[in-house]
Amino acid sequence: MAQYAACPAFQLGRPRYDQSTFLGRLRHFVAIIDPSTLFVSEKRLRECVKLLDDFQHGTLPPGVTDRQLWEAQKVKQVSFGARLLCIKQFDPILTPCIYCHTVHSPSPLGSMLMMLHYLISECRPSFILTQERRSSCLSECQPTPTSTFLQGYFGAVTSAVSLAVGLNVLIQRANRLSPATQIIIQRLIPFPAVASANICNVGLMRHNELSEGIDVLDGNGNVVGSSKIAAKHAIMETAFTRVVLPMPIFVLPPIIMSYLEKLPFLQTNRRLLLPIHSLVCLATFSLSLPLAISLFPQMSQIEVSQLEPEIAMATNSKVVTYNKGL
Image (cartoon, rainbow, N blue to C red; front, side, top):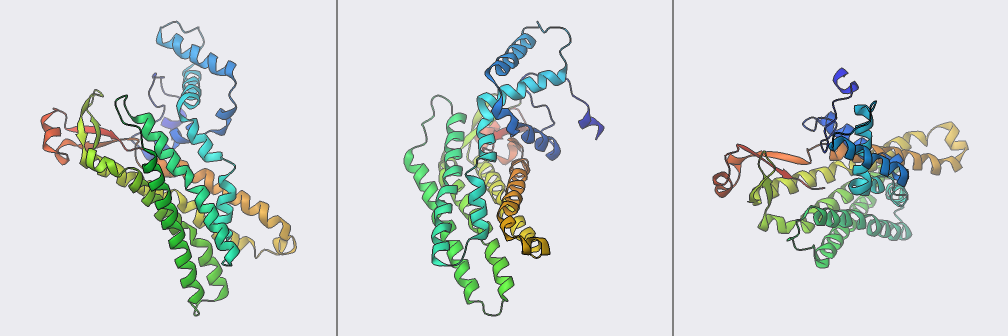
């Protein structure tokens, strides 16, 4: 752990932590989604930009440490590019949605509320995929059409609601299960529903990449060509990440609350159930995002021998990289 405790030498434009390891990627994304960066003042931002400009031109004032430079780079990167992740992590809309997902009632009103929350929550991954694709495109790229956004959105909502309603009906007809077991299983239903919606959303939003391919880069950052095989790997990695992402959110709170609700203190103070459940949801939500997006490197590597022959003929590199997306 000593290698992570020491501050590495500053490298402009490079990540502070080793991106080839899970721990390094986790520390990187935890730093990116730091909610305190949402409150950085314009004065502080200008100071960070000036500090990095001074470093680039070799005119740093004496006494500036590597730690200060890394912090300045984080502030600049988050302010100009990655703040979307901060908003996604701590958006006040999402915690109530998660709460309602995990405690929805099997009554008709509960089913209507469940559908409403799926409609709200699935707007965000579709929007993020659209913005991420637009920001990663070169100037000659065609913007993502609105029809693709709507296709991914309604496809995700349809799969989520269909699976959730279907599982609810099956559980209500399972007479062999005790009432307590039925309640616990009903609280776990949002996980497979949201996971299937995320897979559907990624597939529908990025299906064009399977026919057009994505750019692969050599060791110098030059585009070698467009690979459909790399696109398949990128979509599979993203879809797997989207399955892992809701796992802590929708699995841990129902399990934790099933035990907390049995405590004598909460049985005599029922008004505390709502704030405690909300805190549990917020805590698991805050941990799930960095854990999920740290599973794979953002710039993943693949051997040229696994790609199309034209890619192998266009470069002497044995390994190329591709952006897996979000």
